[in-house]
Image 1 (cartoon, rainbow over the protein chains, first blue to last red):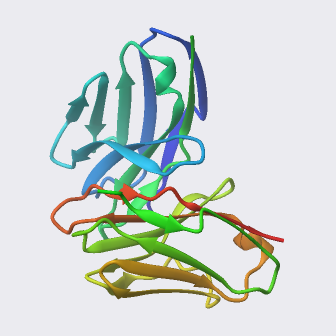
Image 2: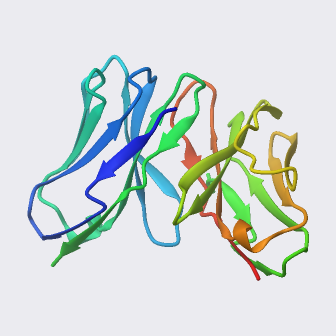
Length: 111
Length: 113
């Protein structure tokens, strides 16, 4: 059974810092890996999607990498801003085309 | 586009009552997903539809839960009878079959007393 783990569970950094969020999964047979952002009281917003054949994806200050063989992904946020404060969720799409989510990393960027 | 629309946004009910959650997917999307989010279990897929047909309902916790999609623009998730442990935020998401990106609604926060 696929399990997705995110470390750390919470992170507090000063504005301007570069940071890395980690995601690991137990079964490397995935179709893709996705990173989402969730703001309090709101739904999820898709940030980046990496297909299983890809190594990384970039969008603005965000860069996500995928190492399928080791079951790991990282989300790199450059020059963090208070507006980046949210919960970041990692999810893998399994062989049944279902998304399996991690428990998230709660990020606080202090002004 | 207005995005995925869910109603109600908040629901408080008493144990034993029937609860119906509603979802309108993004126009043109032909896959719809129902998720449940709790502190203990995180975000879990309950059921999903392709072209209004239920494809996988293995995440539906019990027979008390049922979901329907009578047409491409509307879906319901019903709990009957409701129990306190059903308290959670229920999300609906939709996508087109040609992409893997899902678009989530704002969720319905359900509290069963």
